[in-house]
Length: 436
Image (cartoon, rainbow, N blue to C red):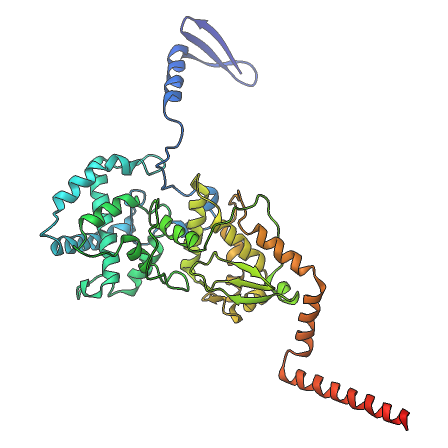
């Protein structure tokens, strides 16, 4: 409890305890405090449009901390001081040195640093939250990290660029670290920085784009290969955003998501209802279709890296104001379809899912991915409604039961044929007996 006395621009405040005895007296400068709050309100309180690299909110991070933390390679400012990241700084410097040695006739380190210094402020504004890194250290980081990524993608694309003592392509574990670390939402640098450095260090006459090289590097994340010709994506913010754009744009014309949510039966129940599974041919895992009783789903490889990228894509969608919930919707749909190990076996036997985890882990895979994620629009609402309407029809379910019970195995077919033949012969014999 507090009592106060005013004296001009200041006020004496008595701090009282539970028994109303005065514990202490403090002086509050009202004018100074008012001016301080007004100054705080005068600042830009709205997140700038350029912000595209976020720290994962605790409500999402708490479910699996390691899915959002790099193992070996720090890209950008937020994990650069972690002790484990220090060991790979020499690898990044070796790649920068190799790039400059190969392009020494057309570009110098001085030019790269000078140019990057000119866009330092714009690059810094892409990060949500304060960055405790000085201007020189920030520019140094952008040049080293950016050139490392560019050289990595070029060496992945052109084997002849790799030295005999290459520290990454001669060690499989280093590539596994990179497949994990480069897709983390907190471990990014702005795409426009990469694009500028890429153009400055490009070989004359080489038409291969940075997006093509990057997508080619991540070709093993899912169970299909990227197209040889990559559409000219526009507006990508960083590597993770490029991967998301690829998945979304490759899924065809984007339909408007519906507000609300409608559950879908598990895949086992769908098969019992007469729905047939079909492996989709689309280059995007998001391109799920239902037509004429066939549920078409593109193949998906489930491994440890799959969880990491989907979690980070969901986090990117949750934090980015203008990002649609396509990946979040995908995780929810697959969670509906997979409830038991039998559901997972149905998907693996049909060739839709290539599971590298144990059956129990794979069954719970999608259930854990989107915990505490908020869904603004559900992009499979129309598909769920169509599937549910089909399941309510009786004939497909009866046909499925007939096929399962009587045509499930060759012996069942033979037995049914023999029984039908015997029945026909019995009827014919009965008719002849009556006629005689």
